[in-house]
Length: 200
Ligand SMILES: Nc1ncnc2c1ncn2[C@@H]1O[C@H](COP(=O)(O)OP(=O)(O)OP(=O)(O)O)[C@@H](O)[C@H]1O
Ligand SMILES: [Mg+2]
Image 1 (cartoon, rainbow, N blue to C red):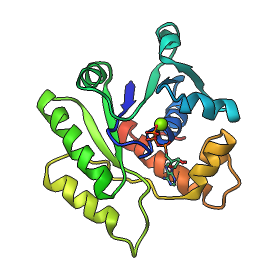
Image 2 (tube, rainbow, N blue to C red):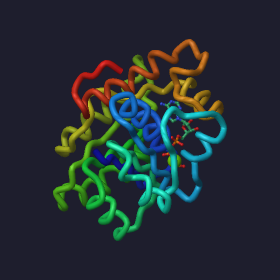
Image 3 (cartoon, helix red, strand yellow):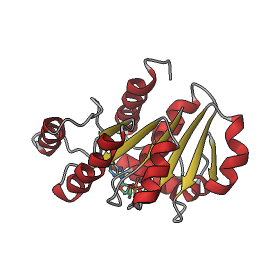
């Protein structure tokens, strides 16, 4: 399966999601993470530490892709219309991470219109969601549902553990953060929604 992470707004969790979904998928079958962002955030994540799967840039990907069952593609924010079309054609599932604030939801609603028009396989993922008493996550979900967008049932909690993982160059369950298992379980649930239940 080829999964691409996409968003108009930056900093919504594309790279964090790419790394953790690649970790989930790699436990099932060999998985390649392709860093398609010139900032090279995924490649640098791997260089700071050691991720348990292969990470390469988009030029190397052509050669490596044939050896892997699953490919996760991290991209830069703000794709052009042409890039968007290529991303839609180039994968099996587009994931649109979005935070629950208006600044992120607005662009997500915009990009989703193109997805619906083109018949693309896509799903919105709520990230950096604060637990109750904050109701921002629930309100964002209601808004996305109201306009008919597909949204993952599970969502990614706002947890410092993810920042620690990025700094240390590891998957979040390899950090010493006390919330590491809660953080990992967020992505495990997303993996299960994509692939069905697996012992990962
Ligand atoms: N669930 C989360 N909880 C807390 N912090 C998070 C979470 N997900 C991501 N972050 C932090 O938010 C920042 C942006 O995340 P990330 O780099 O994954 O976003 P991005 O969409 O790839 O950004 P860019 O558009 O710049 O590539 C990082 O500092 C990251 O550690
Ligand atoms: Mg990124």
